[in-house]
Length: 513
Image 1 (tube, one colour):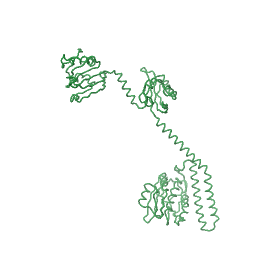
Image 2 (cartoon, one colour):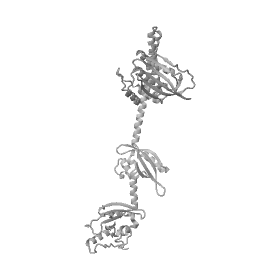
Image 3 (cartoon, helix red, strand yellow):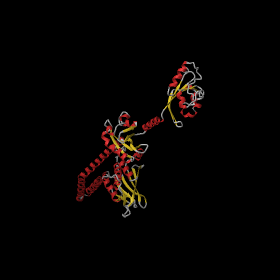
């Protein structure tokens, strides 16, 4: 192979050309000059040796024909010569798997004033393949989320990624490499070393949570996976690990645990308070009920006796509600869970009517209970929620009725072997609801803005609880307004049938005014 440069374009007497030939031949990098028509004008000794070119036979040949065996190595393509003036200076690395060559190319455009003939200069610098692989591995490791590191058997760090450096609050990889955990985070070194030794002794992959205190004093938590670092022969020579920062999650878990502890403490405090107050709450209600009952027995005047009878019923209902609240608190569920127990529907309805009797009596309102004959007396369900629903709706009906009547109707809608559907209808002759107010109640079931023009009183918030209880019982509720005045609330509630108790049906109509 002739390794001398021959320039077929420039005359041999050209001093500039001689200087160029001398300079290019002493360069260790491969240098190739290309004309505007893509033909090769010159190449130096390094290019001939690198690409095994036979010069001067290669002169004037297209660069693409000359490099047909190394086409994947070229940093340019044929489109560059469609508009050669637009080519800009650039650098890139190219690796050819066939030739196992890796080159760092420098593309330099040449103007006519710099050198006649060549319009592009290609400079190629060979790079050892091991260096390229190492560089690519370094970039890959730096892209892995979390800290990646490897240690020798003595626990000394051999390498790590940049993420570990940044997470640890250090400045450079050199701050970690060559040091052990005892030097970097001494407060946590014992546990870290123990985990490393488990890997070295067993050769197994382990997963656990580790905590370290970085130089600024911050405590950080990591979810870590560690595995053996092995030599080509398979011998364990160290440990490789990947640690993902979970400090934010651990802080959230800690805050959640504190909030839970505070809530449990508050609930225990409330339960203890109610338990301590049980005697103080029961005593006055029991005394009130006993005194009114005693006065009722001793009273001979019919009118006074009737009034004392109403007071006695109210005191008894108040005592029963107090006992129920205390029982809920003592059980710790505060009535949240839906109870499925057998109860006497007759007794429950009578309690509701007894509570509403005094205010209805004072307003001279007729209070009635109407129940169909096929409604069973004994049913299975949550009597406390049903009681609260009916009391709230009946109280609102009495409250917003100045004259006339309030009627509670109970109807059997459907029944099968195990379940039945009851409808409770509360109808009054009060002021009624406008269409807008009716729609608001049906949509939101909040009575904050329900006003009666005659007395300018705000409708109570009992419907919020009614809606809540209805939902918990898987029931439904709707409201309608009568044309002649008055409001109708209709509740459909499912119950279970109690087959072991054969109680009589309720009477058809029971006037209680």
